[in-house]
Amino acid sequence: MAQKVWFITGASRGFGREWAEAALSRGDSVAATARDTSTLAELVDAYGDRLLPLQLDVTDREADFAAVTEAVNFFGRLDVVVNNAGYGQFGFIEELSEKEVRDQFETNLFGALWVTQAALPFLREQGSGLIVQVSSIGGISAFPNIGIYNSSKWALEGFSQALAQEVAPFGVKVTLVEPGGFSTDWGGASAKRAEPLPDYEAAHAAAAEARKARFGAPGDPSASARAILEVVDAEEPPLRVFFGVGPLETAKKDYASRIALWEKWNDVSEIAQG
Image (cartoon, rainbow, N blue to C red; front, side, top):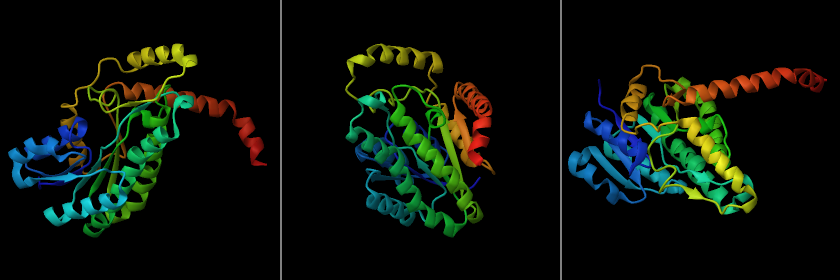
């Protein structure tokens, strides 16, 4: 199999780090972005010029375009673009500040959008490539205490589904990876938390218990590396794929509930037609 060139945002830890190492260990090349490139020093030492470390804050659109261009100039092409940079914002909707909401969207949505826009001219010109958007089971369902995170991922899902149709004639593919609960620091060091309101104290406790029940034992991020290689090497990669054993059942229940509700209210829907 021909060696691939990857561009991975948020490569300092979590999925980004695991996937960068998996790609490099099999002989691929990686442009890896991080806010602090010193976190990539071990990879540079191990893989030399097959690893291009790039300092990047994905919320900076101009910097995103410059980083993608630098990667193409360095490696000559791009085969896999992974929009992994992001974080979890916790807080009930009423508790969130304007800054917390805007920051969440700037990273999780706009960061991915700017990198996608930056990569597309190169992918279209070469007539190939895969854009991997790291979404979440929270990108198709929604849960208390992460509503604004859900919103950012739902938006990512929406533009990516449209994008897949727009770029298919150019030979460019799009895949939304939708993980369940994994042992990353998404809910730890990387997370941000709104100031809680006393009135939601009981609801916060209930939400925490529901999350434990929903995901059970967290997945192993290192195991996800094998899964992402299966996806990027597929002749026809999926538009959507769950990572982990829990998301499928969550999705089935959620979509069954939606269809049942739409059908129950279909008489009203038909009235609205006029």
